[in-house]
Length: 215
Image (cartoon, rainbow, N blue to C red; front, side, top):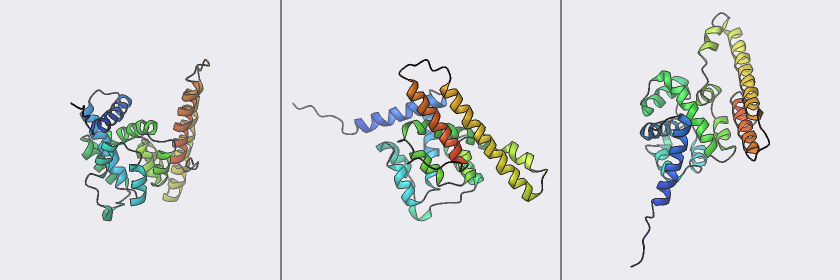
């Protein structure tokens, strides 16, 4: 009798690899929670991209995650509003968390996906979103910046806010590079560590428009 393999087994296996990778980055063994976080990230980002951009992003996903990506998608209704409150509300609802937790979780999923997508792909996605949403997807807390801006006139507040955020981005990028380059004793993993640090720093600078997407 001939042996028949499950034709869906490879797709399931790859989906589990991605699920575990994201769970590890989130620091949890709860795969049901991780699945909700992935689903929330895919849907909230997808809904704010054009049809073509969404297609390019979905091509990076394993077959089963691509199905989640397109679940409930209505091409005629995208992109939806790009404001931060609606993004946070949708993400929190789909992930089953509070709105206060949404930005940190979205940023953590972004970091995990950055290691799974093809190099530069996530940069191209972030580059198509407004600065405020890019910060949400990087897990940046802007509450302090907005509070500080309140003591200025509207025009001054905008300029101070922009400068402050850019300085923070530069400082964070330098810190990331420093951590990635310190204590490297010449092992075979050095190059990978340098590359990962450089990619993370690039994403931080990209969020502020301080660099161009990688080609």
